[in-house]
Image (cartoon, rainbow, N blue to C red; front, side, top):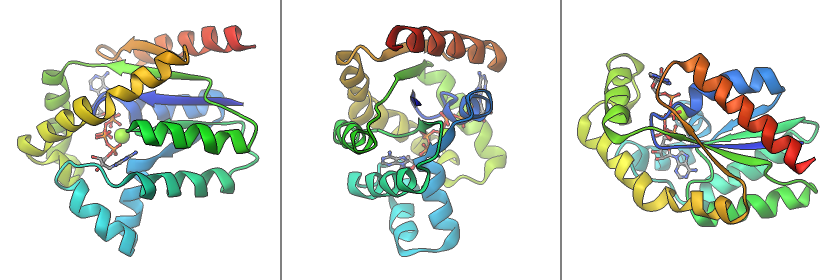
Length: 195
Ligand code: AP5
Ligand code: MG
């Protein structure tokens, strides 16, 4: 199986690159942000509770997102692999993911981290906010809070994968197709190494 963590701060391009990667490698895309937004759209209790935190740019509790990933892994047992987008976002989430994958005798192949500076992130988020309707993209305070939550709570997840020699940083600034090519080259190197 090819199991990728696509990592990076809000606006780094995780969703954009995931769309291309799932086609090329025939993977199932698991974005906890998208899963939470579909709970909100469906008006579930989980969605309503998550929305209060998401709209402020804060993380939802670990057990909520771990539960969603557990469910999706069980639902997709025939998959060729997964791309985890926006998950894991805390070290306990990363530990839980390792345990869940072990139940299926598989593991994370590699983490690709998209590196983009804060000024560019804020520019991208506010630009998308003009048209996306995503409440957490609408104002600069919320966009900045998301970046600061990433720096304090999520950035340590990179060390977790680095300790497992699974961390690869890719420059996330530039043309989308060129970044995609760089990601693919790194995936292929990682696959060759683990084969
Ligand atoms: P989530 O949905 O994961 O959002 P995010 O991480 O904040 O990031 P985005 O989806 O905004 O950015 P992205 O990296 O996918 O970039 P994109 O490709 O869209 O999470 C939302 C919220 O849900 C969280 O704040 C939290 O509350 C909750 N949540 C989710 N997962 C959680 C978890 N595991 N634990 C706890 N809480 C969780 O690109 C951004 C923009 O830039 C787009 O407009 C795109 O067109 C543009 N763009 C992309 N690439 C380029 C490029 N190369 N050059 C110029 N523009 C580009
Ligand atoms: Mg996204």
